[in-house]
Image 1 (tube, rainbow, N blue to C red):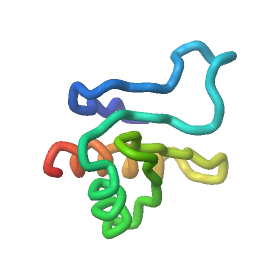
Image 2 (cartoon, rainbow, N blue to C red):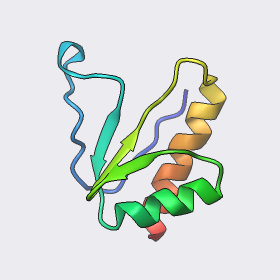
Image 3 (tube, helix red, strand yellow):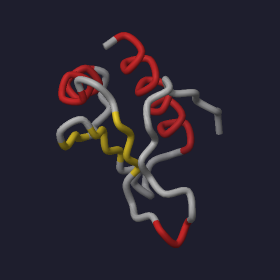
Image 4 (cartoon, rainbow, N blue to C red):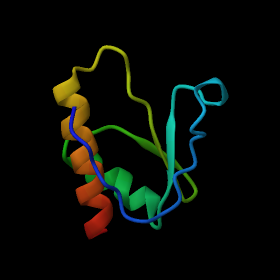
Length: 79
């Protein structure tokens, strides 16, 4: 599994396992534009206001998660 570095926007998901659910939340400017750009790349996420929400499903492979994570970082950086 690859390490992906996202731009320095607030990561909102609690770090403690007992405090988080099934989504990873990340505050990002223009989140709805990021969602649209990711869908063009085949990565399906959603946004609530300026919060990008990723739901890594259990049926995704490690390679799919790595590809999706890398695309999230790339799209955020260019949006």
